[in-house]
Structure formats: C-alpha cells, structure tokens
Length: 128
Image 1 (spheres, one colour):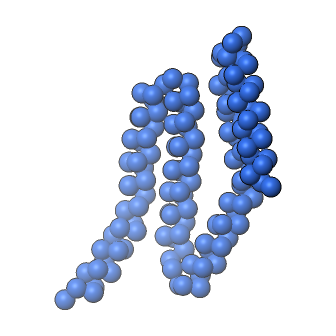
Image 2: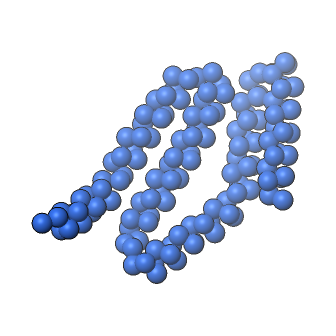
Image 3: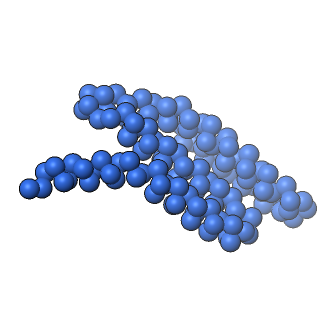
C-alpha cells in the first residue's frame, strides 16, 4: 500500500503544479520540492530496514564496516544528487543540473578510493 500513497502524493502534487503554473509559476517549484520531500519521508522507514539488513549481512560475512559505510554514503549521494538534478531540470536549469552531476561523480570517485585500493591490494596478493 506504500506505492498507492506515493503515487497519490505524486499525482496530487502534479495536479497542484499544473494549476499553479497558470497563475503563480514561481510556486510550482516549491510544490515540487514539498512533494519530493514527502515521498522521501515515506520511504525512509524502508531505507532504514535495508541499511540494517546490509549491516547484518556484512557482519556475518566479516566485511569491513568502513567499506559498507562508504558504499551507503555513496548511494545516498547518488540519490540526493538525482533528486537535485531532477528539480533543476524541472526548473529549466539544465546547466546547473549537469554541474551537479559532474560534481557528484567526482565526489563518488574520491570516496571510493579506499575500496578501490583495497581491491587492488587483494588482486596483487592473489597474482604471483
């Protein structure tokens, strides 16, 4: 039933945006932001369950918790940047959206360096 709530909020937000664009187009962006935030709040409970599951699996598999933390942060950055890029594109600011995409890709690459170096060390140990 969560999907019904999310779709309902999205459709109500869309209808309000369509109506507001005729009279007050500057408010349409605010409604879009509020709608997106409501949807994110609705799925936060599911997200915390997923994070808990990933942490329990990593503990059972003896995976370094630092790496799991990095992967979760990278995933969060990707979600947030996609949200921001969508808002920028909806506002007609595709230039800013592309800059956000580039910046977050650089941040994600820089954050993944410890994982990449650890993988290279493992590969070098395996190779003769």
